[in-house]
Image (tube, rainbow, N blue to C red; front, side):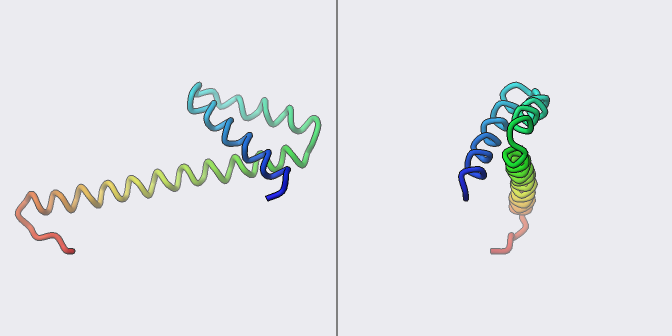
Length: 86
């Protein structure tokens, strides 16, 4: 990636961490405003990185949930005396 994308991605990661720590989604609007005032390119790169990272987080959560359910169903089958497929 280029400098703009690298910096935007680093900032997006830090903003996501801050939101997770504080629960304050307004951080996004404030950071976007600051970036947009000085660089529309930086603002767009930040918002793109943020969307991509948040989408990835949600997709991974769905995947992990699905794997947990699969494992639980497989274990329930074993506990019920059934034979689980290998």
